[in-house]
Amino acid sequence: MDLRAFLQFIIQSMLGFMGTVLTWLVGFFAFSQTFLVSSLIAIGGGIMFFITSKQILNYRYVKRNGLTRREYKFIESNLKEAKQKVSRLQKALFRVRTLQDAKRNLEIARTAQKIYVNAKRDPNRFYQAEGFFYNHLDSLVELAEKYAFLASQPAKTREMESSLRETRQTITTLGETIRKDLHVMLNDDMDTLHFELDVAKQSIHRMNKNNKGMMK
Image (cartoon, rainbow, N blue to C red; front, side):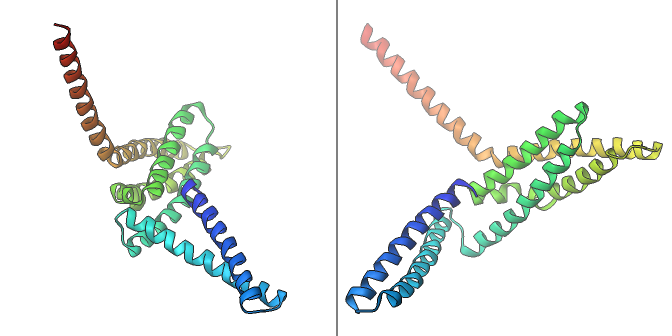
């Protein structure tokens, strides 16, 4: 559960609890229901508050990100699948413990995780890394799992060794590919950063120029 989902759950729980208390008070005092009946009604009311608040919070989140409900559900479904694939990729990569592969595998695992986390935090970024989610991640998972399996075998034939080398090279190439996917995902951020740096530099230049003018 990411931070947004955790905070949303806390808010929903608080609203659900408040709804339960409010419903019980209304049922017990306003409608003179028994303690048991008021409690049963209050539980139902609390559940309704919890579900309704979830829908409202999700709607606000979707609108804030400029997405339709259908788009959000589509992205959420793809990210759910991607999370499982990233987990499988990490397990397969970390099963290969040779020094030759360790650094490369760690970098690939971190890059894949970062792409997933970025899209989870900001669903719009999903569209900036469609190649990763639709193609590159699947290929990496399949190759990494097969490589881990073959690399763990005690007796390797010449053909197996050749296949392992070829697979290792392909995994390395795909690792570079998903690094490019991450860079594409961050392009807008880099453009914004460069713009803000230019503005800051111009502001500093004007301030220095004014200071020099005052000192004359």
